[in-house]
Image 1 (tube, rainbow, N blue to C red):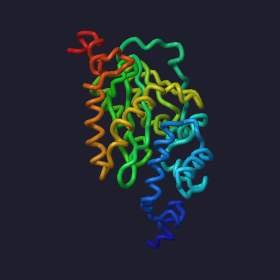
Image 2 (cartoon, helix red, strand yellow):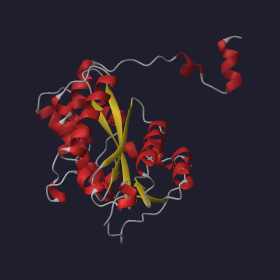
Image 3 (cartoon, rainbow, N blue to C red):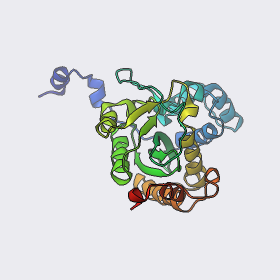
Image 4 (cartoon, rainbow, N blue to C red):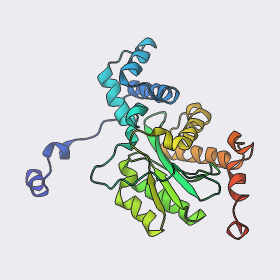
Length: 268
């Protein structure tokens, strides 16, 4: 059957069938790496000011190109929410449940978020699920596209290994509002909480995790492949959970804060 006929039957545009994705150029990857650093240092800066900073550093780049790269990376100034959190208006949005809650025990509340990670050639996305009491990363996954499937895998692993939290908080990103993700939470009777629009600070603990991951691991390396990135990040997160002292935990590690505070029956 001719491709034209196939497209007509499926309701697809022929241009989308013939399109072949191109690799990101080395020059764009270098700019994206620098954009990621600038965004982490100054998350309130939009495309205009980021363009000016890049030009001041010697990059010949225009604002439209910066906007294109930021969209590919999934970042945007905090006053309009990170692009990784762009909502799908067909999905249900749940209310924010943590405003009056005091986090005082493990598995009381978990939070999840997604970030962009640069590699030597290309980039990858990382999702992490954090226990808000202990700051322990209970599960994580990497993926080369912003879909919900790797978020669902991380969620299922976290529940299988550590049980169910009482509340699960995310932003309003389409990966977290998708039925595939929220159905897992409902099946385990977990209260669903989502940040208010523009309230980037609601997920600040995960943002602090991203800063640690990037400055202590990602920016020090140049991953050759997704598998290389996955292995190296796994090693770092093992160190982060088990050996790295946390100032907000009075020098304890996330593992110590998590397991030492669990009821004896749960710990056993």
